[in-house]
Structure formats: C-alpha cells, structure tokens
Image (tube, rainbow, N blue to C red; front, side):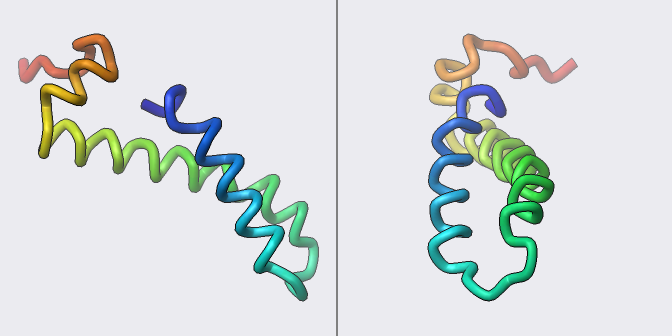
Length: 70
C-alpha cells in the first residue's frame, strides 16, 4: 500500500504545504524531513481501514498479500 499511495500523496501533500505554509521557518526542510513519515503513517492507516472495511478491494489492490490470519 505504501508503494501504491506514496506518489499521489506526496505530490498533493507537498503542494498543500508549500501553498499554505507561508511564514513557517525552514518550510522546505521540514517538508523534506517530515513528509516521508506522514506518508507512511497515512498509507498504513489507509491499508488497515481498507482491510477491515472492504477486504475484497484490499485483496485486489495488494494482489492478495497480507490477508492471512495465521
């Protein structure tokens, strides 16, 4: 899920931060250092939500990996 979600999320999140983050000191550095952690957290949370709510969609998106319970 991280691989699938990271490119669009990085693009949109960077655009939002740079558009609305005026006045924040060292904004580019903070974005460069903080965005990867945010992307991982959102991707893992999205995967968990999909796996719980719609396991069929999750299975399709991941090729059936990560569904075993044992």
